Picture 1 (cartoon, rainbow, N blue to C red):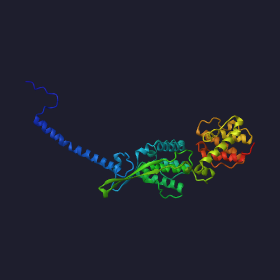
Picture 2 (picture 1 turned 90 degrees about the horizontal axis):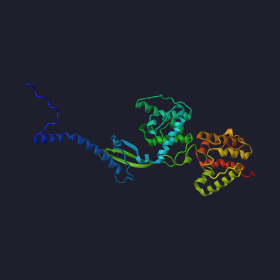
Picture 3 (picture 1 turned 120 degrees about the vertical axis):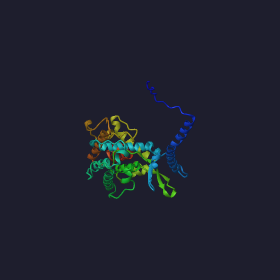
Length: 370
């Protein structure tokens, strides 16, 4: 007699009693999962309570993983809304472009200031390029401790350059940079840009909302928080090395009505001479930034022809514009004018105050010229 044919596996048909028993065990089996879910929900609720608690002027949406703090540990977090602020994004991009321009010959490309600068490697290369010196640090280090040691050396060198001392700076340190604090990294890069007079125009009055979260054992390990606004940049006047205040500082700060009178006088002055070659200026803010009118104006004021091969009549990029302004500055010094306080990059970057200073020096010397 042949053996019975094996049946294909299928869900067994259970009796009502077995079905009832299985459903009970199913329920018991989910207790562990539900407990874990409940713990996660409690952590999230705890963090939300800390952020949304009474007295908070804002309620930033911060991901729950940011709440994983040790006892008494404190962490500063940027409100995600500030990260999306157009001026913050612009500042980050301007700084990234500046770093990439400085380090282009070394084939270093920065895409994210938090991810690319926290270990000190790019900061080292940037500082070496700006100071034209070599730092005595290991070229590559993989371990976290090695990264922190290298970063400490680089930051001491940065502080020495900026403040004349290797003492820790107030706005950044090894811990904040290595933990990828965007506030500290931005403060550091802006300070370097100001000190070395980077040929960039930073967005003014950039502010970010910072939330400081702390796990308080005295409050049953609940999270407490405080919020404040942090200024990253102020006004463009603060960029670069300090210089003595002059009449234009006073005009910009206290007499905008008189500033318009000065601008009108300068436009009349330059057009009196540029009209000889059928050119006209209507906007001092923009029409001198490429250096073309400055070069032509110097030739007209001094009565000589400026060879077209000495400057770019239709400059196509930043470097060509800087060349034109630099050449115009050389012509000014050749005829006995003092070296302009402004940099060529200041003019190219549409810094109106620098442009007015240069034109006013020409006005002072040639205003009585027929």
